[in-house]
Length: 178
Image 1 (cartoon, rainbow, N blue to C red):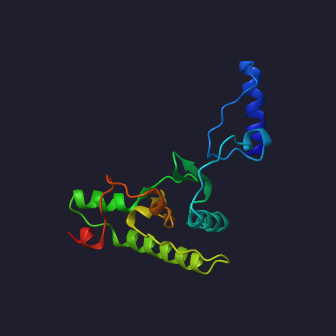
Image 2: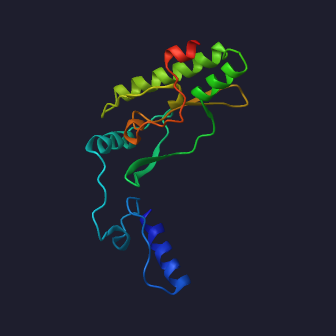
Image 3: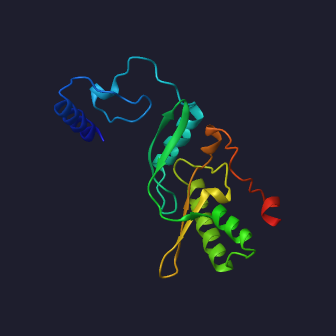
């Protein structure tokens, strides 16, 4: 990160012939002094969110997407996860409901086994983590060509800091039965 920022600043200055650069406030710019200093006070992330992100970044598990970056954009928190090719269980349930089918029980068993093992590891970590908002939208899965199911958990309650998304469908237990 830091070296990339230094090189980007040098390249931008050489290309434009200008000495000033623009910096996006609230984003991570490495530990390069010229990109780290701000003129005004940056918006502050809530302490509870900072602690949750610190715990998430320290926790390593194959079924949890790694946190790559986080910050504030227009005073709203954001998080950048490692890439994972797959779909959410919520989207799979929506599609199954749309075509009036049930999800395969072996797929569901593999997803639930992955989730249970991951939550157990999170609860017993050196810095224990609670998910706080486990919904079908927080569970991602991918079925590889050999038929193996890969599961990833995301969010860990971070969504509550962003505020409700009025366009997101409700997926309560009652909504899933109907």
